Amino acid sequence: MTRWKSITVETRREAVDALSHFFTEHGSLGMAYDERLFGTEGDPADPLPPPDEVTKLTAYFPWEADLHSVKRDFLDFLPLLAESFGAEPGTFLSAAEITDFGWAEKWKENFKPSRIGKRITVKPSWEPYSPSPEEVVVTIDPGQAFGTGTHETTQMCLQFLEEAFDGTPTPRRVLDVGTGTGILGIAAALLGAPLTLGIDVDPLGVEVAGENARVNGVEDRFHAATTPLSCVEGRYDLILANVLAEILSDLKQEIADRLEPGGKLILSGIISEKGDWVAKEYEAAGFRLAGRKEDGQWTALLLRREGDVA
Image (cartoon, rainbow, N blue to C red; front, side, top):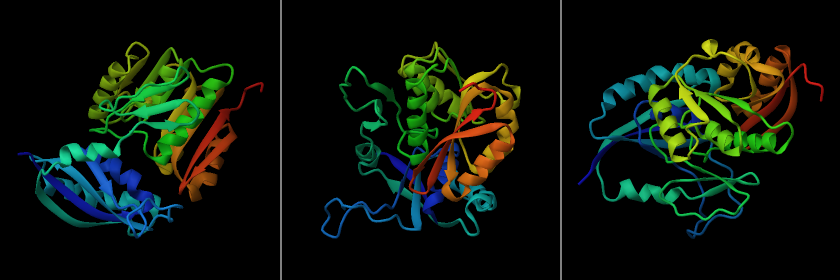
């Protein structure tokens, strides 16, 4: 019999992504939150109702996890969360000890192969899948690092990434800032980039990204490291960063210093109302806005560093 622990918090819908990242970094093996996908008769809702402003998020932990420490760190994290999402972004509700009645396998039912863009498909390892010849399949399991391709911010990054490789010239040196599971860098390698570097402050995330690169057969083209952005050497013709808007603002000059003139920059993790602000921050650092995507309450930006001839 397997035993688990869980923490449940209440938060705004737009903060679910940031809190999922937080709990993952603290050892969570999976999360669930309320989402109204079904109608009153239990059938899939069509059209989907707008998401509730406030939702409950439950993070599941192994039995040996110290939930007192996780709760304390969550409360300490709330002021930082408030800087991005406004006052009272979250509330601790409860902690629980649970006996596994099939959850460890049942949660896998929510993860199915998902087509993102025209030809990128993201799938978990346990799902059999027969891709078409033009598809690029990224195998990523939910686990102890952030990024499984299910969130809008990651999906918009993958769409922009696919478009970058469909154009000319195709990127050859790619930098993924805040790589998490490595999903974006691995996708770039599968699309044809001969050199991709993923960096993250979380050593566990770097370890997971390295293992995912091996699973996807791109360990010769994708490397993950805890190297700070300020210490990354060389320049890249494509950089991706899927982190909070405030962090993107802080990193703009370091990113600019590592992007080739004319190179492309994909930014995500931006709440829609902060999209114009982030775009202006980067325009002041020498970038030109070349594209924008919106999905739900999130924005992703495509920028080019000034100096290109296009």
